[in-house]
Amino acid sequence: MEQSVWVAILATGIIAGTPILLAALGEILAELAGVMNLGVEGMMLVGAVTGFMVAMHTADPWLGLLAAIVAGGLMALIHAFLTITLRANQVVSGLALTIFGTGLSGYIGKSLIGVPLANTFKPFALPGLSELPAVGIILFQHDALVYLSYCLVAFLWFFLFRTRKGLEMRAVGENPGAADTAGLNVFAVRYLFVVIGGMLAGMAGAYLSLAYAPSWLENMTAGRGWIAVALVIFATWHPGKAFLGSFLFGTIDVLGFHMQNFGIAVPSFFLKMLPYAITIIVLIVVTRETKKRRVAAPEALGIPYNREER
Image (cartoon, rainbow, N blue to C red; front, side, top):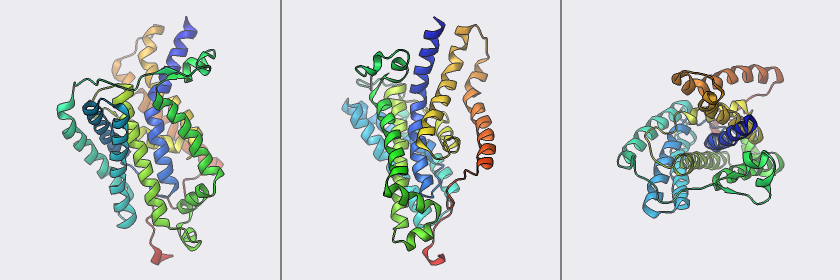
């Protein structure tokens, strides 16, 4: 019985970690290209409300997902214009977009609170893989977006570390001047990956409102965007480690609600703060370890590029 409880906790941890993973993958792309995006939380909220609204009117969650991706991309385009073209401070721009996205989503979604969805993303078992002992239940009995996140992790790992385009993108984040001299369009590369990062943040928001808890609630991301930003550091800008980190944080998130099953009485306010407290602890430990191993952020991260200053 105890083993089945732990399997259920780990399976739920995958579900809870999926929106964090999607947002973190987008942030990894933006940061490896040299642009810090602290607007992830706002982009997730706008994606969540847009996806829910479109899915409600069309009764098609896939159209809702597409709308959320577009909405997240448009929010990221604003960030790209401010930070790449106008060379505004990336931290300030990201924080402004989070505030803007929080307010905009609350305004748009005011009439959507409590409205049910006719169709949502529902779990289904993958033939063969879902029958594996324990692992099948934990990894292969989820909805389509969870499986899509697995594919994204594998694809981005291959793209970043096994393709020339991935190498060029990382070169832009490390030394944009040298990349420009080699013939790469630094501005185009940064625009592209900041927008793709925003699209993944919008997808993460849509997962919350169309699959994880099919509904719209104001501020329903509950800080997951900030955890995703922190997860990028935890993962040292690596998609595979981001998957493991999101699984860890997702499991911690749901573990609190299962503690009572083990006879552990814990105050509810402590359960709510547990994922964020663990995030802070992990960040401290990882930061110390990365300094020892000399694993650093992209050299040009957060620094606007000016061709005249090459």
